[in-house]
Image (cartoon, rainbow, N blue to C red; front, side, top):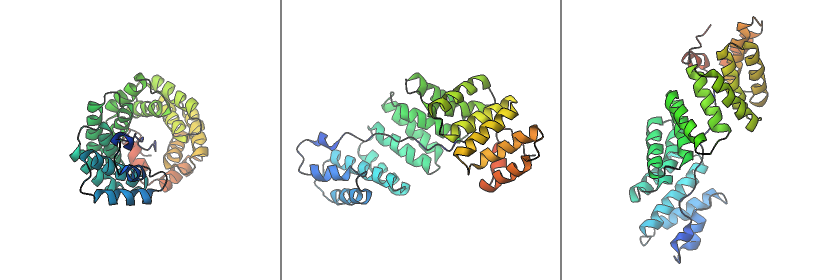
Length: 274
């Protein structure tokens, strides 16, 4: 299984866009959570108490505080602030893109997809939202749409290990176009050889293709990078079973120990439990 986080997005226009606002210093501090998340949140909160804030400034502050909350993994707080930011100004693609990330992280995939779609409507060149929507589609089981979005990212010139690995994985889950899937995964491995997720996906393609010895080899490489990946142990065990390796049951048991439900999840991909 690919353990890939949703990709981050850019900020709203810099606070310098507010020109000679007397609050420029505070707006700057509010929008710089990379310096101190708690300090940024505090400044943003104080700014929101100011009844004379313009609508544009209020949108900026809510968005900035949401970004700081995301940095703290406070997704509920980020969601509240992004809702407010969008209510005040529903024309900002980045606000919908960010809310999609928050909702996706919280497991609300349908709402995340809706937000990414709206971000794309507002900014058709927003390849990040295409990529994030692809992941949300894939996580929700809609591999066909995931493939379409990952392909769009690549066509837009934002090729890289994430869309290559994502498209490879979705093709492998569907069990179709495995030669193309293999090329995508090999490219992802070439671009990011230290990311065990890419090798995990390539190993699954090899398993689907009947190359069980090759799958064992790639799952072993993946585990050297992600040693607690239950899916890699489980599927390495399944591949070993195909070639009568006596250690197969040990890997299968270890995979289940690291990741409860791994057998059921792969059964959903057509790999029935032994």
